[in-house]
Image 1: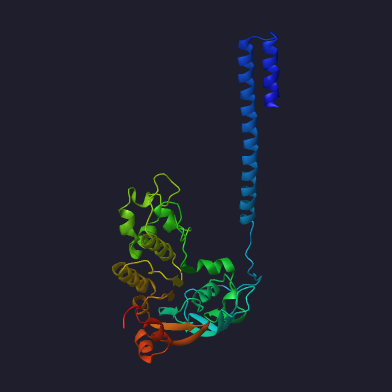
Image 2: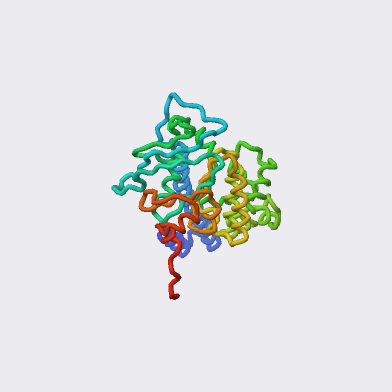
Length: 330
């Protein structure tokens, strides 16, 4: 089409129907019209792509939990007196025939610091998800002060959990906002935000940033500061510490920390665990030693329980897992 238009103009110019100046003017006008059309269709394409994204975003906002909700619910105990009990728990993920957990039973009293140990895939994180009610068990039940947690209103149950997942999020927000997301019921500038950072060891990291707690973190912003994995981990621990919840569940909270920061964080965790149900998952012997009791998992079942010294002396699966020879050494 464009080439045909150009040929017509050139033919009219050669025939003397239009002047050379008019030819140049027509060329420029036609080129501008083509550019305008090109931009129009590009814009329409962008709008279509954006509309698809926005529709997916609204679909996400409209999602509702698949967890069944009861019309008649029980009030959560406050304070928690007897603690958490797990009775005959069994679970397998949808679409899987393998049991992730089988015949798991134990109790955790308020103030008792319990560590969950075991090889990868032994069921520790699955248990954590069941306590958080991201899934419901296929068999057995989880009780808080003798009441099945399925009897509690789901959102209220979540409000009573302070959880740090192993694959925690690194939010491209300010350092303050990253911690505040742990309990958005508090004011953004609540002193509790900085207190949580002090307890987790994140305060030292944040105070060294250009704008302190108002510094943007991550790569999305031009002035965003990127942190190391260990520094992000301390931010995530602070986020969990912020919530004043009766149940604390931490999954690998020290995996990216050096020995000194691990020691400081564990002291803070033990202090925070007073009067609360406190569960901690770890593969580090130094972290497990801080627990009052260790529950050792193997292939979805509880293999043994006891203190670090008791399990080490017993020479069972716990000692076998953590007493592996170093490759290359006799």
